[in-house]
Length: 138
Image (cartoon, rainbow, N blue to C red; front, side):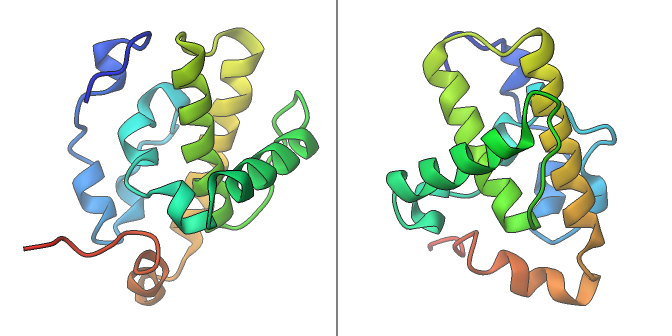
C-alpha cells in the first residue's frame, strides 16, 4: 500500500520486518527511526488491539502529552507499539512526514520501543506477540 505524502523509501518492505513475526526483535535497526517504522507499525492493528479508535487515541494522546516535546516516552512494549501505530496513522493523515523537533521526538519513541522489545526474554516473545499479531489465515 502506498500512502500519499510519504516517500517510497518509507514504505518499502524491509527484510528485518520478517524476523519480527518470529520474535527476533534484535533485527530492528539501531537506531530505529520513525521514517523507517511505517510497515513495522502496521504489523499490528492498533485499533483492534486497543479495543477501539477512541481507546487508542486516549492512550496515545495521554502518553504523548506526558512524553512532552523532548520525547521522554514511557510504557511497556505493547503500549509503545500501539502509540507508534497511532502516530503513523496521525502523520499519514497530515499528509507530510514529521520534520524537525517532531521527527526527533518520534525517533525517540521508536528507539524506546526497540529497547523494550529487545528486553523481552526470548522465551516470552511468542506469548507477547500472540495477542498482537493474528495468525495467518489459509
